[in-house]
Image (cartoon, rainbow, N blue to C red; front, side):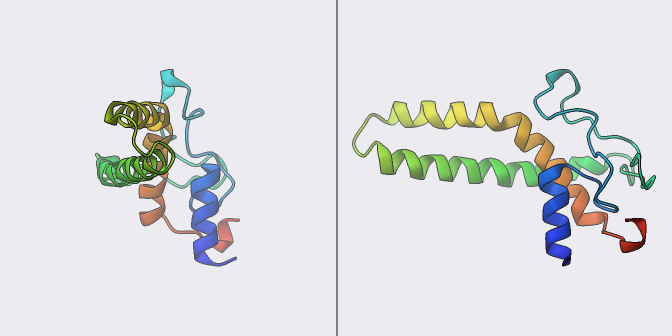
Amino acid sequence: MSIMWNKLYSICAFKCPKCLKGEFFESHPYNLRKIGEVKTHCPKCKTNYILEPGFYFGAMYVSYALGVGVFVLTWFLCDSIFHDDSVWITISIISGSIVLLGPLMFSLSKIIWANIFIHYDEEKR
């Protein structure tokens, strides 16, 4: 597999970026009690997920980009479907989609940020 497919698999399946087998998060993104809690180490290959203190603060930039993407896509779809309707319908739909997708975007931002710095190792597989 190429590097791109390994990264994409790790992001979509929430798996370890190094071995692609171990779980990255403590629980599902919509478990609001443990939302976004990253394991300290991979249970399979023992890769340290916390490279330095405050490592995941950089994921805020990724989260911002994901939020803008959801906003633009939702706005475009609302504009295509509801041509001349009230702007408040569009604002309500965009706000609802951001709130509903918030936990998923929060988790995705962390796994994407980790995949930027932790690289796949064929020997760990």
